[in-house]
Image (tube, rainbow, N blue to C red; front, side):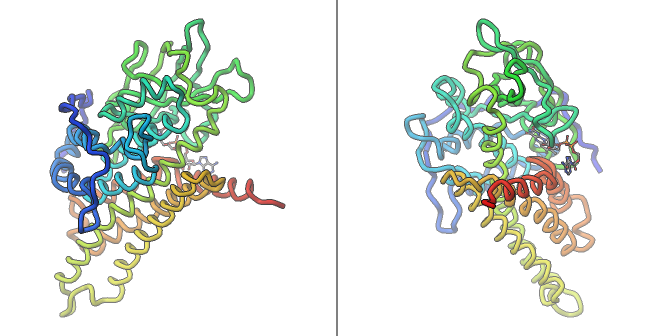
Length: 401
Ligand SMILES: Cc1cc2nc3c(=O)[nH]c(=O)nc-3n(C[C@H](O)[C@H](O)[C@H](O)COP(=O)(O)OP(=O)(O)OC[C@H]3O[C@@H](n4cnc5c(N)ncnc54)[C@H](O)[C@@H]3O)c2cc1C
């Protein structure tokens, strides 16, 4: 095995010029969109190189921004193309369908959560200064996890203090998607001066004095989605740097991460669709006991299980996104269901794809990469245990007795 060489400095290659965006690429007769086509022709061919180098494909990132991806779902008066968050979600799923690169798609999800958070919870200052660059190719991140833990987000040790001119923020975030290359981040912290209800969300320009990033982490999979630490030392922020109300950060956060969770389900379904087509082709060609292996019932069982995952992950994800758009109080529960069934189903499906190829599936290559990438989705976006915990908490909270 070629030992992957993790760069100590992430790629920061500036992207190309921004052209006039095409707001909503039309759907093609095959059911995909211009995003799927772009993913097939541009992202997929670059994915192996990005994987070996363990970097985010910034060129494709910029081209997607130029194609208008980040304007989907953003209201027109904020410079977007209008529509709903389902449009953005479908755009990202279209990319997952064509790119063969789950890592890149997870980086898109991290960014999408920030774009939606700014629109839904941002003020005029955020809409004017933070949102526009994120629609034009800058990279966003959402930073909750800290070195002492990620599941219990309310235990954050990152501290914000008011100053005469705004805020001062200090703390350390760990394992943050896009951190090595991100330009802006939503950072979870607390404001001790507020008393018991003190969790707050800060918008931070990661090029500010006092911000330092760690090197890109060496991961088992998802290597085209760089993760890393963000160190904040007395970072001075604008008076309007808090997203939502100071002290109300947990409520805002649950809305923000719900969208991310539903997106996991949707992109997992989309990512698996072409894998399923390919494995059916293979199972028709490959023979054992004088017949194509697809004629064997146990093989058929694995193939149908993958299709069931595609259907269930997509349906639950869309139910979650539609609930979020509608302001349904059970949206958080539905989004956790989508994340849970999507990531657990993907791990099973990845093993099925590997097993269906026999020894060839165990040889280092695209199939082993899917297995490795799939495992990361059990942890990123909140572990399966935390999704179950949220589902139960939401069920109990919405009982009427
Ligand atoms: C690829 C990748 C990308 C990531 N990107 C981001 C990002 O962009 N932003 C970000 O903030 N974080 C990110 N993370 C970090 C991720 O969110 C955390 O790793 C995750 O929330 C778990 O936190 P932890 O690793 O500290 O584990 P811990 O919280 O220490 O948990 C350890 C184990 O205990 C279990 N556990 C904890 N509490 C309970 C409980 N109450 N009941 C049952 N089981 C429990 C957990 O499920 C887990 O199995 C990323 C992680 C990965 C792998």
